[in-house]
Length: 227
Figure 1 (cartoon, rainbow, N blue to C red):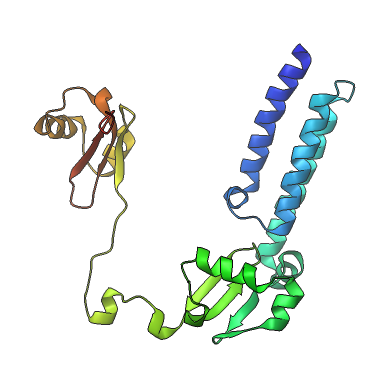
Figure 2 (cartoon, rainbow, N blue to C red; figure 1 turned 120 degrees about the vertical axis):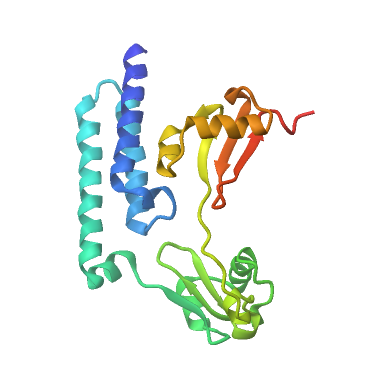
């Protein structure tokens, strides 16, 4: 029992490290070969956890081999467009210039209900509003609306707007991020004065605080919305 316990902990840590080595893409949308690698890693990790008679190193070597294969394939994909087309496939155009490509739907075994559902998920409730719909190699559907259905942008009406900057997190769950303060050339004394302005004496009372592009400190207190 103790052996299984420690095997499970070690394999869990090893698999997490292996997934991280494979890259952040694996944590979001997977290419087909990446999905296969993930499934096989999960299966290989479970075998030495369940059966203590199987040498522990067997599972480690197998998982490491799969990670190595995935890295090699990813490098090949980066270097060769032909290899990328073979390994990952090519995007499929399901709607082209406002017309449904029925042949492509049949080839991919996608029915109209599936297509309409995916369009709704992309906030296109009328198929007549779509100029192009492309099924990407990772399974996601990219939709390009017709020109007269595109939302207006600032440039369309001649407005010039400043680029948006991401807010900088300064306090998370009562703890100050001094590195972020340093990045924007601020220090604890500045933060202390700003907190005093908002009648906050204890940093631990703050759930989240950030600084926007105008150098305003925005604070969300703990239990602020609880009754």
